[in-house]
Image (cartoon, rainbow, N blue to C red):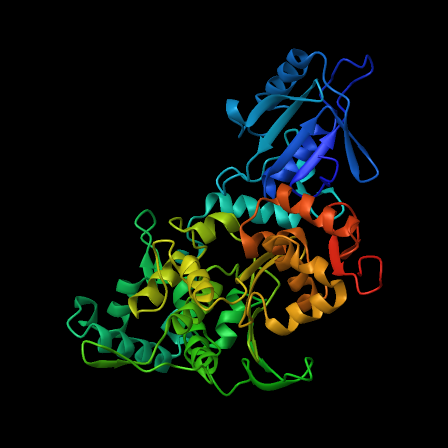
Length: 494
């Protein structure tokens, strides 16, 4: 464990107390709150960090520490909720000394925010590169809103009506729906009847109020009307030049020449994303199939961006396309962990009505299979896995990067062989992947390699530490989420 580095998923605390026998640290519940509200993590009690090494100091009276832990977790004056189970807390032996390992899961949307004390606005912590920090009021309110609101886009908008709808968008959607489901019962009746059936128009049974829903406005509305309901709403597609990253070859944004709503944005952008893709010829039931898993993955990525967006957030929806590269960004964090999204089977779209509207026209999945489909398509081409990143702090957003780049490009392998000689070929496959990725990306993180390979973060910390010690990599930044760069200087050369 001497190469194991403290990072966003791991924290060590001496926890010896004044008498040296063991005491739950005063700042434990801040770390508990921060990890639960972010990505979870592990806290080790009875370990000291010396430079980049861990040294066991031990817990003599572990029963006392464990009692303080469980008493605090179940004290509503101390922390808002206990999300630990008995098997999340384990006493282990290291160098004949007792240490306590506490595994803290990421709290569910229904439980967040986990906060210290009785006031979420003053006791909610999050975790970032530098450590644990108090969440600002806007972030806490967003978590509270997510906790209570399963489908914010089903909300009825007072004083909004069909006058705020771009009828051509609605008619186009209805035609697309009819072409795939010509006998569907939703197609009978007026435009208003159709809107009611797909969730664009709703009635509150308790108040008898009826009107346009947020989903109906976002999907089919006029841009100015959408901005009245969502002041920070903006959708943006940029096709970038290969050599000039700050210039675009093509752009789609609400510029007054089209409606600016989500449906028309989707229709325009999906065609741009598909342009230039190599489509292998194949037959299915004697019918030519033009769409590949790559097409499906890009469609899923676009739809996911739209249905998971927090339209109260201050970040725009952004889609970027360059040669062999796609980026999808939406305002707001994910409602489930990135690991659960990749694993599949769980779905918790922020905008469930929008999700269903896209599903009705054959765009998007609803059974938690969309993200696995993206990763499967990229894995099938032996490309670098798609990479999710949640940005916490104002403004919050989620990005998905998809690169059509080989996991181990031959030219990069040759570069590493020149730099490190025969030593490179003697490394493990995972170590070579780390170095090749560092050579391709300029800088890498533990999280990035974890999503590429599926390796455990603790194992990766050891490998990264070993590669730094061996002179293959250099590191920079604080302990949590260090950045690693390929060492092109000389210490690791042969």
